[in-house]
Image 1 (cartoon, rainbow, N blue to C red):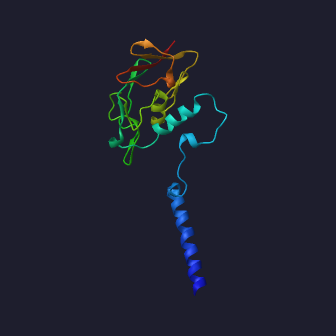
Image 2 (tube, one colour; image 1 turned 90 degrees about the vertical axis):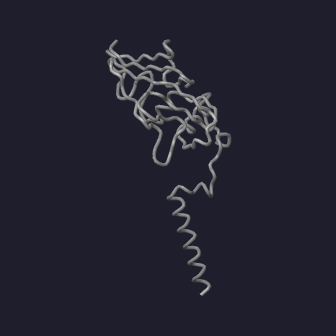
Image 3 (spheres, rainbow, N blue to C red; image 1 turned 180 degrees about the vertical axis):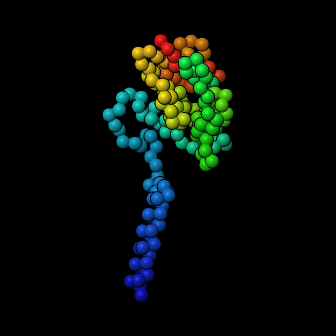
Length: 177
């Protein structure tokens, strides 16, 4: 009888481990490492910091944890027409990312539990849309088209590396050369 109870207990424990793993609760047994605990890699200078910032941008947060709160404004113009930046970028029923939108005004909300230099590339990663000096959304630079960006009315070549600041006016324009 005792042998059967041990077998049942082992089976139950194994089943719980499988269920925890399938639900993503494995971190209960193996807590996530902080960026400082991650193994060293042969990445370019600043990569770990940018990677940690991107991880934070893609995480979920709560309003009650907000320590850093800014509102840059983004406008995207494609061949002379404004593109709509969707409402609720970075917001789902069960998650609000530190970088998000609430409406289609172009106002980006940065509400983070840490004061950190989020970039325009972080916003596009949350939006799951491509952006670089060579592409904006589905539009690519080619022999007949270019992408220009201004920040507060001045030309900028920072593109996805632009650090977001409060009340910034960012305009990205895809146009005929």
